[in-house]
Image (cartoon, rainbow, N blue to C red; front, side, top):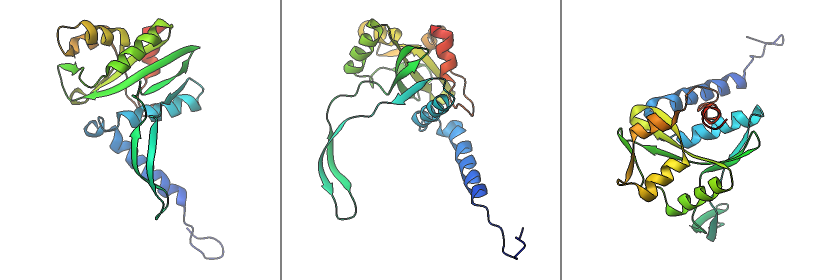
Length: 197
């Protein structure tokens, strides 16, 4: 296509759409789902915020910066975490406080508890005590299934369970499978509706 003066028309928007679409297709593949769980939750949160459905944000991990290299811009070369992290996400939905942690597992039969800290369990217990909604989003990568499981089940297994994992059957019986789609990527608000409202 050419303008009346003979110059060729070049659209930058078409190129941007093509590259965005291909990255979306890549991230929806089951092979990449584990690496992208946090990204998919973040994209879902953007969608929910933009449509005034809820306000859920990723909680930043506070760090203490020790050394910065200014020779080629400002690059942090040495830092450490100031305190233990609590959970990944928090916010508000339908006037209720929401707090949750997102985890991946390649295990097909259970979710191992070894990557949940005591500090996270204590935090979630406080959220439940004060009437908030607390849960885990667990991605079973090998099964391509994502579940919402109320924090009370995880706390019970963590503190009183005879095993160091939660069997997959607990997710099937007590959890809500989160529908996966394009926009939002993870329809976890639908799962919250089913479980808590």
